[in-house]
Image 1 (cartoon, rainbow, N blue to C red):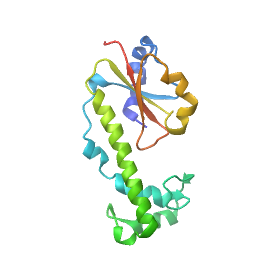
Image 2: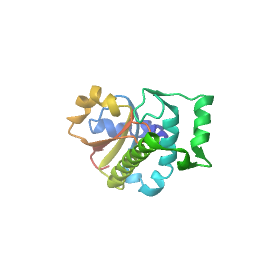
Image 3: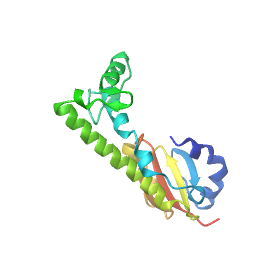
Image 4: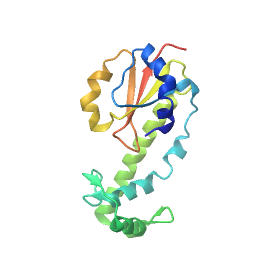
Length: 175
C-alpha cells in the first residue's frame, strides 16, 4: 500500500474527476509532475532476503506460489536458520530449495525493477496521474474492463511488494 498516495486522495480527487477517471478499489493518487525518480538499485536492495522470508512462511513450505503465508514460532525459527544478520545463509540451502530460491529472487527483482522503471518513465510529466488501486494480480480479471478501455488509461504494473495492488498511469489535462 502506498501511504503517500493514500494521503493525497482528497487533494487530487478533483483532478481525477475532471479527467473522467474512476478506478474501483482506489487506494491513492500521485501527480507525476511532483515526483522524483526512484533509485532502482536502492529500491531492489534486500529483495533477496524478503523473498527468502516469504519462502519460509509459505504454505506449502518453500513454495514460490503458496496458497497463503503463515507466521509462527516455527516460521520464525526457519527465518533465523536461513537468514542471519540480514544475509541469506546459502551454505544451508541445497538442492531444490536453492533452485526455488534463486528463481524466486530473480522473479522478485524483475517485478521490483519493472515497477520502479515504469514509475521513473513518467516522473516529472505534468500530464500523468499515478493511481494506486487494489486491483492487481488476479483482481485485475474482475476489474480490467472498467479501466483498460478508458481513454485516459496508459498502462498498469502490479505492485512488487503486494501483487493485489497495482499502479495505473493515466493521461490527464495539464494543470
